[in-house]
Length: 325
Image 1 (cartoon, rainbow, N blue to C red):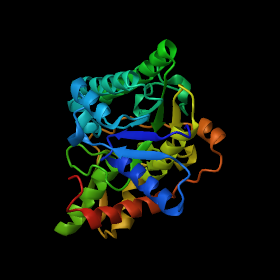
Image 2 (image 1 turned 90 degrees about the vertical axis):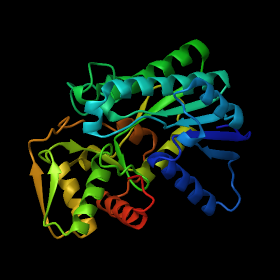
Image 3 (image 1 turned 90 degrees about the horizontal axis):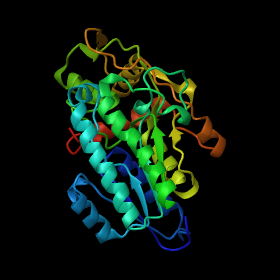
Image 4 (image 1 turned 135 degrees about the vertical axis):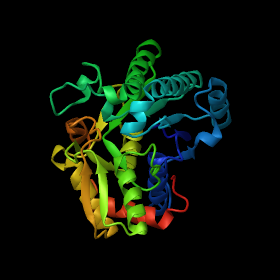
């Protein structure tokens, strides 16, 4: 980033990753009594403008005049929410992404870092997946709407780069969790859903806790504060239109049953976990390689999974009355 005044606009700034980036920037400022970076950070949520609407997107950029954008805003949801609303996920995310990138180009934004997801990768693929295979076949049918819309960000980035020389790039995180997550029973991802449901089970004094599915699928999970640090690193240091995977190592992959046990330990739940195998499991695995990240940022240390789960459970219990339920 340049030495001039940089204005960084974070779309989706009130969500899980946006709030984590805000925390990381605030911590950075506490440690640095004389900030060396000339950065103004602006975190915008859906209340600041509907990014599905081009006019509202333009008004947001006109107000803040960003030099850089971290684009997190998206319509997101868990497995069952995706399965029921694939068309909505495709149309809404296509509108959001097209508006943000086109308005970024029109306002001469120097750099945009957009957030993709490992679910965009082909369903039938050799593991571990890396950045070169994104478009090598259809994604898993359960969330094809969201997946294809996110893939198109990579196409837009390449188009703006080849036609206009724009530095629009993207990161591909594995499954993210942490404070400020969406804990809604209808639309949350697996970790916040399990944390919220287990808290409800404890409050009701029930002796068993049911996990939907077999518990056997494997996932890589990244703590939101770790992802936030990597996002800031990408913004300041990574200058390629090619996407980069931001993921924990392959050996850090865990089963959903291991996740449930970690949440049980963090909650101190004394009951028994059972599995409802009549419910869909979704994709069995989507192991991603972070080789590119490790080659560029060798010294980065990820938060141990059990600690990150404990911190997230503690945050939820302390903030249940204001969490997204």
